[in-house]
Length: 438
Image 1: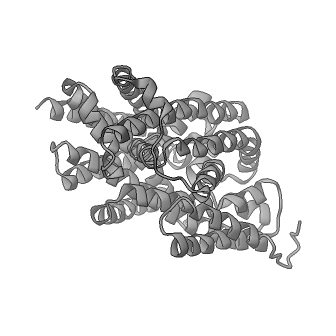
Image 2: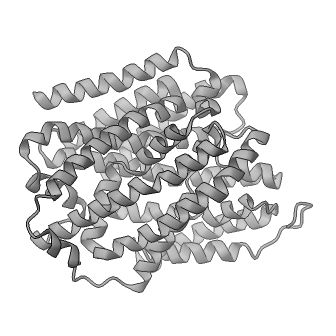
Image 3: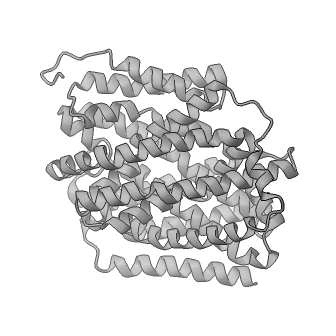
Protein backbone atom coordinates (compact mmCIF):
# COMPACT_ATOMS: atom_id res chain seq x y z
CA UNK A 1 0.00 0.00 0.00
CA UNK A 2 2.84 2.40 0.84
CA UNK A 3 4.31 1.89 -2.63
CA UNK A 4 1.06 2.84 -4.34
CA UNK A 5 0.69 5.96 -2.17
CA UNK A 6 4.22 7.11 -3.07
CA UNK A 7 3.59 6.35 -6.72
CA UNK A 8 0.26 8.20 -6.85
CA UNK A 9 1.78 11.20 -5.06
CA UNK A 10 4.60 11.36 -7.60
CA UNK A 11 2.25 11.01 -10.59
CA UNK A 12 -0.07 13.76 -9.32
CA UNK A 13 2.94 16.01 -8.65
CA UNK A 14 4.34 15.66 -12.17
CA UNK A 15 1.00 16.03 -13.94
CA UNK A 16 -0.07 18.88 -11.64
CA UNK A 17 3.08 20.85 -12.41
CA UNK A 18 2.58 20.29 -16.14
CA UNK A 19 -1.01 21.53 -16.01
CA UNK A 20 0.06 24.58 -13.98
CA UNK A 21 2.81 25.67 -16.37
CA UNK A 22 0.56 25.08 -19.39
CA UNK A 23 -1.68 27.94 -18.26
CA UNK A 24 1.04 30.50 -18.95
CA UNK A 25 2.85 28.74 -21.81
CA UNK A 26 3.22 30.21 -25.28
CA UNK A 27 3.67 28.34 -28.55
CA UNK A 28 7.45 28.78 -28.24
CA UNK A 29 7.31 27.36 -24.70
CA UNK A 30 5.50 24.27 -25.96
CA UNK A 31 7.76 23.74 -28.97
CA UNK A 32 11.21 24.61 -27.59
CA UNK A 33 10.94 25.74 -23.94
CA UNK A 34 10.74 29.46 -24.72
CA UNK A 35 14.47 29.71 -25.61
CA UNK A 36 15.17 31.21 -22.17
CA UNK A 37 16.36 28.26 -20.05
CA UNK A 38 19.17 29.12 -17.63
CA UNK A 39 22.36 27.17 -16.93
CA UNK A 40 20.96 25.13 -14.04
CA UNK A 41 17.89 24.12 -16.06
CA UNK A 42 20.17 22.96 -18.89
CA UNK A 43 22.39 21.09 -16.41
CA UNK A 44 19.52 19.27 -14.70
CA UNK A 45 17.79 18.46 -17.98
CA UNK A 46 21.01 17.13 -19.52
CA UNK A 47 21.75 15.12 -16.37
CA UNK A 48 18.23 13.69 -16.10
CA UNK A 49 18.15 12.79 -19.78
CA UNK A 50 21.51 11.03 -19.54
CA UNK A 51 20.93 9.17 -16.26
CA UNK A 52 17.62 7.42 -16.49
CA UNK A 53 16.67 3.90 -15.48
CA UNK A 54 18.08 2.59 -18.75
CA UNK A 55 21.50 4.04 -17.84
CA UNK A 56 21.44 2.46 -14.39
CA UNK A 57 20.69 -0.92 -15.94
CA UNK A 58 23.02 -0.74 -18.91
CA UNK A 59 26.09 0.81 -17.25
CA UNK A 60 25.88 -1.78 -14.49
CA UNK A 61 25.36 -4.49 -17.09
CA UNK A 62 28.40 -3.21 -19.02
CA UNK A 63 30.49 -3.23 -15.81
CA UNK A 64 29.30 -6.78 -15.08
CA UNK A 65 30.25 -7.82 -18.63
CA UNK A 66 33.33 -5.71 -19.43
CA UNK A 67 34.68 -4.82 -15.95
CA UNK A 68 36.97 -1.80 -16.02
CA UNK A 69 36.45 -1.69 -19.78
CA UNK A 70 33.38 0.39 -18.91
CA UNK A 71 35.67 3.35 -18.30
CA UNK A 72 36.78 3.28 -21.93
CA UNK A 73 33.35 4.73 -22.64
CA UNK A 74 33.73 7.26 -19.83
CA UNK A 75 37.05 8.51 -21.24
CA UNK A 76 35.36 9.10 -24.57
CA UNK A 77 32.42 10.77 -22.84
CA UNK A 78 34.64 13.35 -21.11
CA UNK A 79 36.21 14.38 -24.42
CA UNK A 80 32.86 14.37 -26.22
CA UNK A 81 31.01 16.36 -23.54
CA UNK A 82 33.70 19.03 -23.30
CA UNK A 83 34.04 19.45 -27.06
CA UNK A 84 30.30 19.72 -27.44
CA UNK A 85 29.86 22.11 -24.50
CA UNK A 86 32.66 24.57 -25.28
CA UNK A 87 33.06 24.28 -29.05
CA UNK A 88 29.89 22.98 -30.68
CA UNK A 89 27.10 24.27 -28.39
CA UNK A 90 27.92 28.00 -28.74
CA UNK A 91 28.08 27.65 -32.53
CA UNK A 92 24.76 25.77 -32.57
CA UNK A 93 23.14 28.45 -30.36
CA UNK A 94 24.30 31.30 -32.60
CA UNK A 95 23.07 29.57 -35.73
CA UNK A 96 19.74 28.70 -34.09
CA UNK A 97 19.05 32.36 -33.35
CA UNK A 98 19.55 33.19 -37.01
CA UNK A 99 17.37 30.35 -38.30
CA UNK A 100 14.83 29.82 -35.47
CA UNK A 101 15.56 26.09 -35.20
CA UNK A 102 13.27 23.49 -33.65
CA UNK A 103 14.67 20.16 -34.87
CA UNK A 104 18.14 18.72 -35.36
CA UNK A 105 17.61 18.80 -39.13
CA UNK A 106 17.09 22.57 -39.12
CA UNK A 107 20.83 23.06 -38.49
CA UNK A 108 22.20 21.25 -41.58
CA UNK A 109 19.40 22.70 -43.72
CA UNK A 110 20.39 26.23 -42.66
CA UNK A 111 24.12 25.67 -43.19
CA UNK A 112 23.86 23.83 -46.53
CA UNK A 113 20.75 25.66 -47.73
CA UNK A 114 19.38 22.29 -48.83
CA UNK A 115 16.10 20.90 -47.50
CA UNK A 116 17.03 17.27 -48.19
CA UNK A 117 19.66 17.41 -45.43
CA UNK A 118 16.92 18.19 -42.91
CA UNK A 119 14.78 15.30 -44.16
CA UNK A 120 17.66 12.79 -43.92
CA UNK A 121 18.71 14.08 -40.49
CA UNK A 122 15.23 14.01 -39.01
CA UNK A 123 14.42 10.55 -40.39
CA UNK A 124 17.57 9.08 -38.83
CA UNK A 125 16.89 11.01 -35.61
CA UNK A 126 13.41 9.51 -35.35
CA UNK A 127 14.86 5.99 -35.52
CA UNK A 128 17.68 6.81 -33.06
CA UNK A 129 15.47 8.43 -30.43
CA UNK A 130 12.77 5.79 -30.82
CA UNK A 131 15.28 3.15 -29.75
CA UNK A 132 15.96 5.12 -26.57
CA UNK A 133 12.27 5.42 -25.78
CA UNK A 134 11.96 1.64 -26.04
CA UNK A 135 15.07 1.21 -23.91
CA UNK A 136 13.77 3.51 -21.17
CA UNK A 137 10.34 1.93 -21.09
CA UNK A 138 11.55 -1.67 -21.23
CA UNK A 139 14.29 -1.04 -18.66
CA UNK A 140 12.02 0.59 -16.11
CA UNK A 141 9.24 -1.94 -16.51
CA UNK A 142 11.73 -4.81 -16.18
CA UNK A 143 12.97 -3.44 -12.86
CA UNK A 144 9.46 -3.05 -11.46
CA UNK A 145 8.52 -6.56 -12.58
CA UNK A 146 11.68 -7.99 -11.00
CA UNK A 147 10.37 -7.03 -7.56
CA UNK A 148 6.96 -8.62 -8.22
CA UNK A 149 5.13 -5.43 -7.26
CA UNK A 150 3.61 -4.79 -10.67
CA UNK A 151 3.71 -6.90 -13.81
CA UNK A 152 5.98 -5.84 -16.67
CA UNK A 153 2.92 -4.98 -18.74
CA UNK A 154 1.27 -2.89 -16.01
CA UNK A 155 4.48 -0.97 -15.24
CA UNK A 156 4.86 -0.28 -18.96
CA UNK A 157 1.29 0.97 -19.19
CA UNK A 158 1.54 3.29 -16.17
CA UNK A 159 4.79 4.93 -17.23
CA UNK A 160 3.78 5.47 -20.86
CA UNK A 161 0.43 6.86 -19.71
CA UNK A 162 1.96 9.39 -17.29
CA UNK A 163 4.67 10.60 -19.70
CA UNK A 164 2.15 10.89 -22.52
CA UNK A 165 -0.14 13.00 -20.33
CA UNK A 166 2.34 15.67 -19.28
CA UNK A 167 4.04 15.92 -22.69
CA UNK A 168 0.64 16.41 -24.32
CA UNK A 169 -0.26 19.11 -21.80
CA UNK A 170 2.86 21.29 -21.85
CA UNK A 171 5.28 19.99 -24.48
CA UNK A 172 9.00 20.73 -24.28
CA UNK A 173 8.63 23.16 -21.37
CA UNK A 174 7.18 20.31 -19.31
CA UNK A 175 10.05 18.04 -20.37
CA UNK A 176 12.65 20.52 -19.07
CA UNK A 177 10.85 21.47 -15.84
CA UNK A 178 9.98 17.89 -14.88
CA UNK A 179 13.59 16.95 -15.65
CA UNK A 180 14.68 19.27 -12.83
CA UNK A 181 12.42 17.46 -10.36
CA UNK A 182 13.40 14.04 -11.69
CA UNK A 183 17.11 14.90 -11.55
CA UNK A 184 16.80 15.83 -7.88
CA UNK A 185 14.95 12.57 -7.22
CA UNK A 186 17.66 10.58 -9.03
CA UNK A 187 20.33 12.31 -6.94
CA UNK A 188 18.52 11.28 -3.73
CA UNK A 189 18.30 7.75 -5.10
CA UNK A 190 22.03 7.67 -5.80
CA UNK A 191 22.83 8.93 -2.31
CA UNK A 192 20.91 5.93 -0.96
CA UNK A 193 22.91 3.66 -3.28
CA UNK A 194 26.22 5.14 -2.12
CA UNK A 195 25.16 4.60 1.49
CA UNK A 196 24.50 0.94 0.66
CA UNK A 197 27.82 0.56 -1.18
CA UNK A 198 29.77 1.84 1.81
CA UNK A 199 28.52 -1.19 3.72
CA UNK A 200 29.84 -3.66 1.13
CA UNK A 201 32.32 -6.03 2.78
CA UNK A 202 35.79 -6.05 1.21
CA UNK A 203 35.06 -2.97 -0.91
CA UNK A 204 38.79 -2.61 -1.62
CA UNK A 205 38.91 -6.07 -3.20
CA UNK A 206 35.95 -5.14 -5.39
CA UNK A 207 37.76 -2.06 -6.68
CA UNK A 208 41.01 -3.87 -7.45
CA UNK A 209 39.39 -6.77 -9.27
CA UNK A 210 37.69 -6.80 -12.63
CA UNK A 211 35.68 -9.46 -14.37
CA UNK A 212 37.83 -12.29 -15.81
CA UNK A 213 36.02 -12.03 -19.13
CA UNK A 214 38.19 -10.95 -22.06
CA UNK A 215 37.46 -7.50 -23.44
CA UNK A 216 38.47 -7.26 -27.08
CA UNK A 217 40.29 -4.27 -28.54
CA UNK A 218 37.28 -3.81 -30.80
CA UNK A 219 34.95 -3.51 -27.80
CA UNK A 220 37.24 -0.99 -26.07
CA UNK A 221 37.55 1.13 -29.21
CA UNK A 222 33.81 0.88 -29.73
CA UNK A 223 33.09 2.10 -26.20
CA UNK A 224 35.52 5.02 -26.57
CA UNK A 225 34.02 6.03 -29.91
CA UNK A 226 30.51 5.79 -28.55
CA UNK A 227 31.37 7.90 -25.51
CA UNK A 228 33.09 10.59 -27.57
CA UNK A 229 30.86 10.84 -30.63
CA UNK A 230 27.34 9.99 -29.48
CA UNK A 231 26.79 13.43 -27.93
CA UNK A 232 27.02 14.95 -31.43
CA UNK A 233 24.33 12.67 -32.83
CA UNK A 234 21.51 13.10 -30.31
CA UNK A 235 18.60 15.41 -31.08
CA UNK A 236 17.90 16.29 -27.44
CA UNK A 237 21.35 17.94 -27.16
CA UNK A 238 20.52 20.23 -30.07
CA UNK A 239 17.07 21.06 -28.72
CA UNK A 240 18.66 21.96 -25.37
CA UNK A 241 21.01 24.30 -27.24
CA UNK A 242 18.06 25.97 -28.95
CA UNK A 243 16.20 26.36 -25.64
CA UNK A 244 19.09 27.97 -23.72
CA UNK A 245 18.91 31.62 -22.67
CA UNK A 246 22.42 32.42 -23.89
CA UNK A 247 25.80 30.89 -24.70
CA UNK A 248 27.14 31.31 -21.16
CA UNK A 249 24.23 29.35 -19.65
CA UNK A 250 24.59 26.71 -22.33
CA UNK A 251 28.32 26.15 -21.79
CA UNK A 252 27.87 25.92 -18.04
CA UNK A 253 24.92 23.50 -18.21
CA UNK A 254 26.40 21.22 -20.86
CA UNK A 255 29.94 21.25 -19.48
CA UNK A 256 29.08 20.72 -15.81
CA UNK A 257 26.83 17.74 -16.64
CA UNK A 258 29.86 15.48 -17.14
CA UNK A 259 30.78 15.68 -13.43
CA UNK A 260 27.75 13.87 -11.96
CA UNK A 261 27.67 11.51 -14.96
CA UNK A 262 31.25 10.36 -14.25
CA UNK A 263 30.50 9.96 -10.55
CA UNK A 264 27.48 7.80 -11.34
CA UNK A 265 29.48 5.73 -13.84
CA UNK A 266 31.99 4.96 -11.08
CA UNK A 267 29.25 3.97 -8.61
CA UNK A 268 27.66 1.69 -11.21
CA UNK A 269 31.08 0.17 -11.99
CA UNK A 270 31.45 -0.77 -8.32
CA UNK A 271 27.99 -2.33 -8.30
CA UNK A 272 28.67 -4.35 -11.46
CA UNK A 273 32.01 -5.64 -10.20
CA UNK A 274 30.59 -6.51 -6.79
CA UNK A 275 27.64 -8.43 -8.20
CA UNK A 276 29.91 -10.35 -10.59
CA UNK A 277 32.00 -11.52 -7.64
CA UNK A 278 28.83 -12.63 -5.85
CA UNK A 279 27.12 -14.29 -8.80
CA UNK A 280 28.82 -14.55 -12.22
CA UNK A 281 25.87 -16.29 -13.89
CA UNK A 282 23.25 -13.51 -13.95
CA UNK A 283 21.49 -12.04 -16.95
CA UNK A 284 23.28 -8.69 -17.45
CA UNK A 285 19.88 -6.96 -17.61
CA UNK A 286 19.14 -7.91 -14.00
CA UNK A 287 22.48 -6.98 -12.36
CA UNK A 288 21.36 -3.59 -11.09
CA UNK A 289 18.11 -4.81 -9.56
CA UNK A 290 19.86 -7.86 -8.11
CA UNK A 291 22.22 -5.50 -6.30
CA UNK A 292 19.36 -3.32 -5.06
CA UNK A 293 17.53 -6.35 -3.74
CA UNK A 294 20.52 -7.87 -1.95
CA UNK A 295 22.48 -5.03 -0.37
CA UNK A 296 19.98 -2.27 0.26
CA UNK A 297 17.66 -2.29 3.26
CA UNK A 298 14.27 -3.72 2.26
CA UNK A 299 12.52 -0.86 4.07
CA UNK A 300 13.69 1.43 1.26
CA UNK A 301 11.93 -0.65 -1.40
CA UNK A 302 8.69 1.37 -1.80
CA UNK A 303 10.59 4.64 -2.17
CA UNK A 304 13.19 3.09 -4.47
CA UNK A 305 10.57 1.80 -6.88
CA UNK A 306 9.03 5.27 -7.13
CA UNK A 307 12.51 6.62 -7.83
CA UNK A 308 12.82 4.07 -10.63
CA UNK A 309 9.70 5.54 -12.19
CA UNK A 310 11.22 9.01 -11.96
CA UNK A 311 14.41 7.84 -13.66
CA UNK A 312 12.44 6.08 -16.37
CA UNK A 313 10.33 9.13 -17.16
CA UNK A 314 13.30 11.53 -17.14
CA UNK A 315 14.87 9.88 -20.17
CA UNK A 316 11.69 8.68 -21.88
CA UNK A 317 9.99 12.09 -22.08
CA UNK A 318 13.00 13.71 -23.79
CA UNK A 319 13.15 11.03 -26.47
CA UNK A 320 9.37 10.97 -26.96
CA UNK A 321 9.30 14.71 -27.59
CA UNK A 322 12.28 14.44 -29.94
CA UNK A 323 10.65 11.71 -32.06
CA UNK A 324 7.30 13.52 -32.21
CA UNK A 325 8.79 16.93 -33.05
CA UNK A 326 11.11 15.55 -35.73
CA UNK A 327 8.27 13.73 -37.47
CA UNK A 328 6.51 16.99 -38.38
CA UNK A 329 7.20 17.79 -42.01
CA UNK A 330 5.77 20.81 -43.85
CA UNK A 331 3.38 21.69 -41.02
CA UNK A 332 2.15 25.28 -40.85
CA UNK A 333 3.04 27.31 -37.76
CA UNK A 334 -0.54 27.52 -36.49
CA UNK A 335 -0.98 23.73 -36.68
CA UNK A 336 2.33 22.71 -35.09
CA UNK A 337 1.11 22.14 -31.54
CA UNK A 338 -1.91 20.13 -32.64
CA UNK A 339 0.17 18.02 -35.03
CA UNK A 340 2.85 17.53 -32.39
CA UNK A 341 0.29 16.16 -29.95
CA UNK A 342 -0.98 13.64 -32.51
CA UNK A 343 2.60 12.61 -33.29
CA UNK A 344 3.30 12.18 -29.56
CA UNK A 345 0.37 9.79 -29.18
CA UNK A 346 1.49 7.69 -32.15
CA UNK A 347 5.09 7.66 -30.87
CA UNK A 348 4.09 6.41 -27.42
CA UNK A 349 1.80 3.72 -28.81
CA UNK A 350 4.56 2.46 -31.15
CA UNK A 351 7.16 2.43 -28.37
CA UNK A 352 4.78 0.61 -26.03
CA UNK A 353 4.19 -2.14 -28.60
CA UNK A 354 7.92 -2.63 -29.32
CA UNK A 355 8.88 -2.57 -25.61
CA UNK A 356 6.17 -5.14 -24.95
CA UNK A 357 7.87 -7.66 -27.24
CA UNK A 358 11.59 -6.73 -27.14
CA UNK A 359 12.90 -6.86 -23.58
CA UNK A 360 16.66 -7.48 -23.90
CA UNK A 361 17.99 -4.22 -22.48
CA UNK A 362 21.73 -4.60 -23.11
CA UNK A 363 21.18 -5.59 -26.76
CA UNK A 364 18.80 -2.67 -27.30
CA UNK A 365 21.39 -0.33 -25.77
CA UNK A 366 24.30 -1.47 -27.92
CA UNK A 367 22.29 -1.11 -31.13
CA UNK A 368 20.89 2.23 -29.94
CA UNK A 369 24.37 3.49 -29.03
CA UNK A 370 25.66 2.74 -32.53
CA UNK A 371 22.56 4.41 -33.99
CA UNK A 372 23.40 7.54 -32.00
CA UNK A 373 26.69 7.75 -33.86
CA UNK A 374 25.29 7.55 -37.39
CA UNK A 375 24.82 11.33 -37.57
CA UNK A 376 27.78 12.38 -35.42
CA UNK A 377 30.41 12.91 -38.15
CA UNK A 378 27.89 14.57 -40.47
CA UNK A 379 26.75 16.97 -37.73
CA UNK A 380 30.36 17.86 -36.82
CA UNK A 381 30.89 18.59 -40.53
CA UNK A 382 28.15 21.24 -40.64
CA UNK A 383 28.87 22.65 -37.16
CA UNK A 384 32.34 23.49 -38.52
CA UNK A 385 30.58 25.53 -41.22
CA UNK A 386 31.10 23.15 -44.14
CA UNK A 387 28.28 23.60 -46.62
CA UNK A 388 28.39 20.76 -49.14
CA UNK A 389 25.03 19.00 -48.81
CA UNK A 390 26.24 15.91 -50.69
CA UNK A 391 29.01 15.23 -48.22
CA UNK A 392 26.69 15.71 -45.27
CA UNK A 393 24.05 13.35 -46.68
CA UNK A 394 26.60 10.74 -47.79
CA UNK A 395 28.20 10.78 -44.33
CA UNK A 396 24.84 10.29 -42.60
CA UNK A 397 23.85 7.47 -44.95
CA UNK A 398 27.35 5.98 -44.71
CA UNK A 399 26.99 5.79 -40.93
CA UNK A 400 23.68 3.97 -41.28
CA UNK A 401 25.17 1.52 -43.81
CA UNK A 402 28.15 0.99 -41.49
CA UNK A 403 25.75 0.12 -38.70
CA UNK A 404 24.01 -2.52 -40.81
CA UNK A 405 27.35 -4.01 -41.89
CA UNK A 406 28.52 -4.06 -38.28
CA UNK A 407 25.39 -5.80 -37.09
CA UNK A 408 25.72 -8.45 -39.79
CA UNK A 409 29.44 -8.96 -39.10
CA UNK A 410 29.60 -8.74 -35.29
CA UNK A 411 26.03 -8.77 -33.97
CA UNK A 412 24.94 -6.37 -31.18
CA UNK A 413 28.43 -5.72 -29.76
CA UNK A 414 30.28 -2.43 -29.05
CA UNK A 415 32.61 -3.20 -31.99
CA UNK A 416 29.92 -2.01 -34.43
CA UNK A 417 30.76 1.59 -33.44
CA UNK A 418 33.93 1.21 -35.53
CA UNK A 419 32.03 0.29 -38.70
CA UNK A 420 29.64 3.20 -38.13
CA UNK A 421 32.58 5.62 -37.90
CA UNK A 422 34.27 4.17 -41.01
CA UNK A 423 31.03 4.44 -42.99
CA UNK A 424 30.53 8.05 -41.86
CA UNK A 425 34.06 9.09 -42.78
CA UNK A 426 33.92 7.38 -46.18
CA UNK A 427 30.73 9.32 -46.91
CA UNK A 428 32.66 12.59 -46.64
CA UNK A 429 34.61 11.63 -49.78
CA UNK A 430 31.53 12.32 -51.89
CA UNK A 431 31.07 15.94 -52.97
CA UNK A 432 27.92 17.21 -54.66
CA UNK A 433 28.22 19.81 -57.41
CA UNK A 434 26.22 22.64 -55.88
CA UNK A 435 27.20 26.23 -55.22
CA UNK A 436 27.69 25.50 -51.53
CA UNK A 437 30.99 23.62 -51.59
CA UNK A 438 33.63 23.70 -48.97
